[in-house]
Length: 91
Image (cartoon, rainbow, N blue to C red):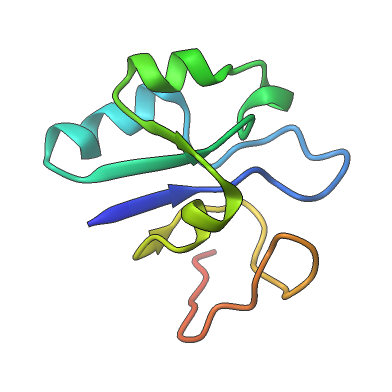
């Protein structure tokens, strides 16, 4: 299973849904982590740290095409945040 981590789209949002430390466990269990390039930039987490943890740095389209997408803000169909059919959000 592929897990996508897109960059947050809100201009002042410095959060990211996964860190280099948190991607290690799913990868260790056999999942593939697809982190959008610069997803952690505003949280001072660079692509090299994600790669070192085993994640693949990818495009926004590939991150959103994963079977499971981890995201801080809900998809809304605007910009790079597609409205995902069957999407659910957790509080």
